[in-house]
Length: 272
Image 1 (cartoon, rainbow, N blue to C red):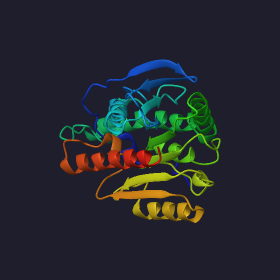
Image 2 (cartoon, rainbow, N blue to C red):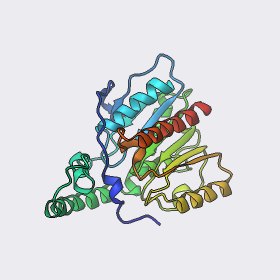
Image 3 (cartoon, rainbow, N blue to C red):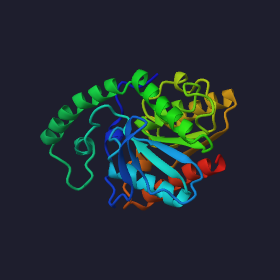
Image 4 (cartoon, rainbow, N blue to C red):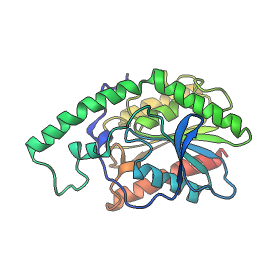
């Protein structure tokens, strides 16, 4: 069953430094999209499904750029939210980016009380009955425009769940070639992954409250029962959100983030 609310690590983390090098387009198959710099001969197209902070989060755009540059893929980051995503400022309500300047108890409590109503409203407006149809249509339209190009999806946290759903028969067969997810949150299993029809790669940290070691074993078992080609990895001591909002100044976190990036790129390269 799905959790009612995500853990604190879903809405916390570090904002990464750097200047994304791609471009925005106002409408691509009905959605605003960030397009990472496109390599000369892309292996395929990756559709990046974001966490709750949305398509403008610098971390997402920088990672999309890295997928394009290091993996040789065309990478799209669509805006799948029909409204403003959770503001980045909400990160400070639950785990400050600067860990040495935590807010006072009363200030922190006030921030949490302010952030939670927006989070609940967000989860309602992005419920599966809305989001699955929106994403499936985007992917099917994209495939129709690029019939000979392998299409992949990768998602993080909130987006991880939907990336895995995009690998099921809820999307027209032949649209997607493979999917990947890092620390998917709010999953409802087995229903979210029933009738999976493409190869799947999943990663999560051993200190993840939502995708725990036990959860990952259960997920693996359900995929194995379906005969799905599967790549599943755990990252020692990593918490939820590490692969996209981890603190790059911490050596172990930076290495895990790099390994998670490689996991995704190697999987999609294998299925290009």
